[in-house]
Image (tube, rainbow, N blue to C red):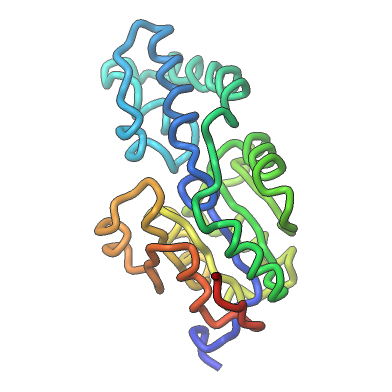
Length: 230
């Protein structure tokens, strides 16, 4: 059986920009840090280009180019941990249609997991707060000593802990980093256009499927096919 014909038994999701619209809380947190240094702040929409590769990259992209030295970056990352801890759930919300799809996948017996480049503690906090109604077998954020996406190590760790071959998993995310992660792990890849990155950028990454609505995910060949979302 070819990988594309293998039934999918597990879905691994990115968090920010895929399950959760967290743009405002992330942007506001970093803007508070910038303002504390008397640096210019950015419109929330600008953060669509900054998010996705971990907190250090987020801070580096937001800081003025001439200020991106190691000492200030270290301080900004440490400050982010404090500021975001007070703001992570103020404006963030699951994307419209996500909860209905999670209902369908759960009813069909599809195993669910999350892999994010967000710090692990915040990833777990977001999932427990916003998605406690659904069973996610494994939730992993960025952890010390574990390479970030698009490295395949954490994705393959999830597959192993779920007892699944990579070919039985789909990786779902809103960035080229997520598509590359799934490809590097030998998983099928789905890019979602409702997140932080432009549709054309996602198309150029050549995911197996590019979708515009959460319900479009249900067209994949899951082992036990979910019913339609009404």
